[in-house]
Image (cartoon, rainbow, N blue to C red; front, side):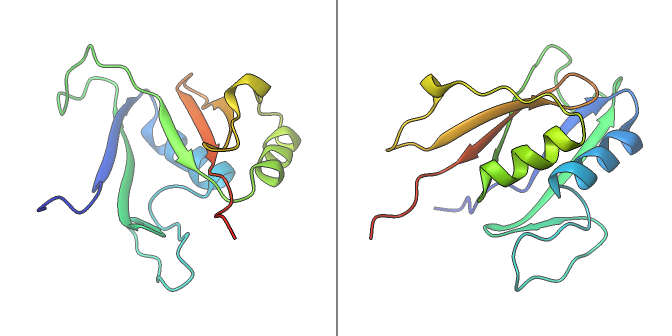
Amino acid sequence: MPVLGMGGLFFRARDPDALNAWYRTHLGVGAGCVSDPDAKPDEWTWRTLGGPMVFSAFKADSDYFAADKAFMINLRVSDLDSLLAGLRDADIAVITNAEWDHPDVGRFARIHDPEGNAIELWEPPAPAA
């Protein structure tokens, strides 16, 4: 199979620099961030456990992709409770719903970035012992 994974996520923003900074600060996502303990940070990519991924906001009038497309970002997390506590401490509204959670699928929460984009946070279930 020639496709190895995602190489990037691109989306429009009114203020790309500020939005990129918000993602780096509150979620550890974006250029220069490292989730893989064996990876070295660089100025362009977010080094994830699955490999590098570009995470970058685009100008609102970008023609890089169709103007009528909407999205929701889903981020895989390892300690949802701790992340949610930090987000709440930063006065970021967190939405949870027990009906979203399932032992076979994992736990979920939602937040929105400063430009109103939905972000789903997903903690997969622990591997079976």
